Image (tube, rainbow, N blue to C red; front, side, top):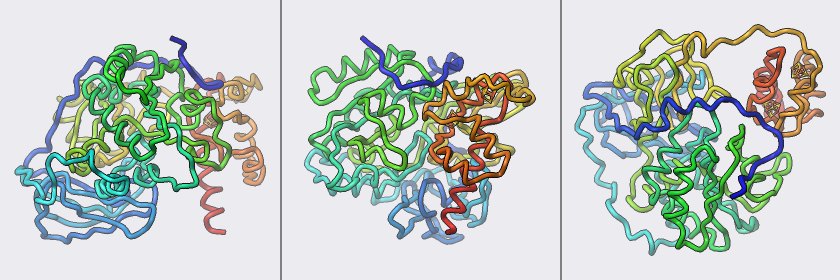
Amino acid sequence: MKALTFKRGVHPPDSKEYTNKKQIKILMPEEGSDIVVPMSQHIGAPCEPIVSKGDRVLLGQKIAESGAFVSSPIHSSVSGVVKEIKQVLTPGGAMSKAIIITNDGKFEEDPSLGKDTDYESFSREKIIEKVKNAGIVGLGGAGFPTHIKLNPGPEKKIDAIIVNAAECEPYLTTDHRVLLEKTDRVIKGLEIVLKLHPNARGYIAVENNKMDAIELLTQASKKISNISVVTLQKKYPQGSEKQMIYAVTKREVPSGKLPADVGCIVDNVDTILAIERAVVKDRPLMRRIVTLSGGAVKNPGNYQVRLGMSFRELIEMTGGFKEEPAKVIAGGPMMGVAVYSLDVPLIKTSSAILCLTKEEAELPEESNCIRCGKCVGVCPMGLMPIELNGDVLANDFEAFEKNHGLDCIECGSCSYVCPAKRHLAQSIRVTKRAVMAMKKKK
Ligand code: SF4
Ligand code: SF4
């Protein structure tokens, strides 16, 4: 079977051997521990608390919401008492208002939580409402509210629903484990989304370093005529939305446009699982699966955790460190963000915690560009990272925009390949934020 892919990209070592054979293990927060629930866990308007200090809350109870169109409600992942509402540090480094709940260890469910539903009889509107009320956002890291993505409007003719199971970031293995351990539920989740778009075909797109999952999915879906399992080449950043769409459909998403503009909806595997859970079991998003990896941890693995548990609690519950990490990253090594405190909460978009040893984390000094052009040769967006870096150094925002700096997907391929170890992606990312903030102000 021919493995599909996109243009350019890089081949970093995948370092998945730490965890790709480790079954998902459920970790529950301990009685008396604090669950920290930031109001900003998604793209769009932050939520506002609808509970107050001293209130008792139940598992699955909605505790925060927003009236804005682009937003997503938040639910309690434990039962307990609201200890306080205050500003906290989030894994991305920003401060956010958060509800702090002291877990009573009872996990007493909100009575509004349904059990098994008669989901096959649900209308389109009802499915979207369930997804919206469940607070589901893109769990691959983007955090875009899923109910909006699933409903792009009647003018968009959706003909491809792609389950993004590339998992191209080194170290990350949760998608792989979900495909192996929850195969039928992933397929059911995709069938639910296909019900919303009856003219579409469903694709489950998996890189060819997960052949066991490809075989299992192919077997499990062979009687379903509108679902295909697609084998992708192992290449980074294969899981990036535009690159994924190109690999599967050969369509290019133009600059400034969305997947729906070329007839596609792309959802990560864990998001599809959350959709299945919300629609079939009527349960909101209260947990996620996280890869804990890197040479500094005693027990790397794939852990299902309650949202709001801290990085520290997760690491300690798994046995702690075998050596002091030189660097801790929220997410993968290519696109993740270094965290400076373990007292940050696991939020909806936390896909991994990497605890790297000194050797793993070593970042060589930058030196002068030798004009080799390698960064240009690998950029999946066809940009000129070296030119953009020059615009950044010259503080020339106009040239940065003219050179399509805003199209950068921040994948880090240019930095990875640069022999002079120039911090290309980092500099472009910072400038992109500044230009976008300026545009917003205007
Ligand atoms: S310029 Fe942006 S999109 Fe291109 S390789 Fe660098 S980080 Fe990736
Ligand atoms: S890869 Fe590095 S050294 Fe080569 S052109 Fe790009 S910035 Fe310069």
